[in-house]
Image (cartoon, rainbow, N blue to C red; front, side):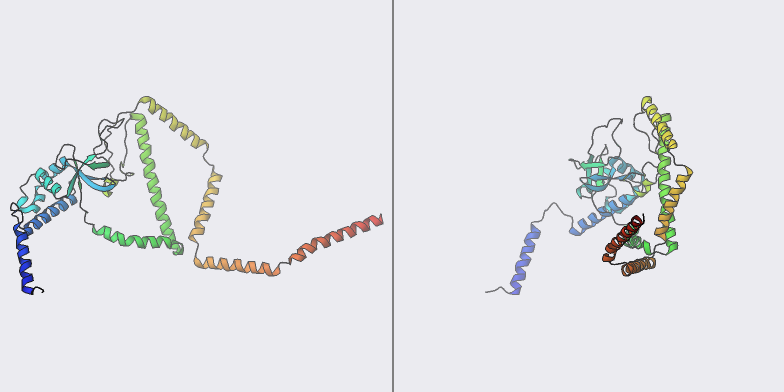
Length: 347
């Protein structure tokens, strides 16, 4: 016989009571409060990560690109900005180490360690911000050469969402460049040429300043030090002021050698520089290529194909048959033999 509905409800209620009775007696925090605390620490982590005063970098942790910071920077940040802890409400009185340990326990942070732990040749100390990291075996907070990476996905800004919709439009526009109006083609051409000229000019001036200062003073001076770096943010990419030179000064023999190499290189370029006529020919050739690209249009292309078809048809209709081509040389040869025979007979 099947049980009635009341008996089934009674069985389920008793099972629920048994499960509730077997709950850990030490954990007196209600579930709603636990969720609230978890949300508060999540909000705190997001607020700290989005704050500009906490210095952080991007690195590679086990083939994953992560954003990380140093332990001592976290302590100094909370000391300078205690208002950030207001998000934690009842836990705002906790110290930086306790907060970091809670974040580590909730898997919002993970402690990392540098992969390269030895000083490379030519350097005095380890890198301040290593590019490659690994998980530290001791997952506790420390401010002594300790690194901590965020484990949650950062909220996407509005401009990234807009950019994700703009990129397909830009890609389609690049593919349709041949059918652009002439003025649009000129605008795109001059814009791209200007950007390329700016990039090569910055790189050339950057290298020239570095080479001059390195040869004369033995110092490494890079303006825009992060312009070619891969793991940098947009604000760090256009940082003009150079980094402090942490490497040893080069020997005077190496500086003298590279100075001689640079002088020889400049003399060779000066000797093999093209003259004015060669430059004019090259400019004319490039101008013709650019004009062909800018003046191309579907109508001209179709008219060109139609002209080619008409020329091919006309040549096919007016061309003589293969037999005539073969017979014509034979007739000419017979005429030549007759003329030579007549002249010989007259003699």
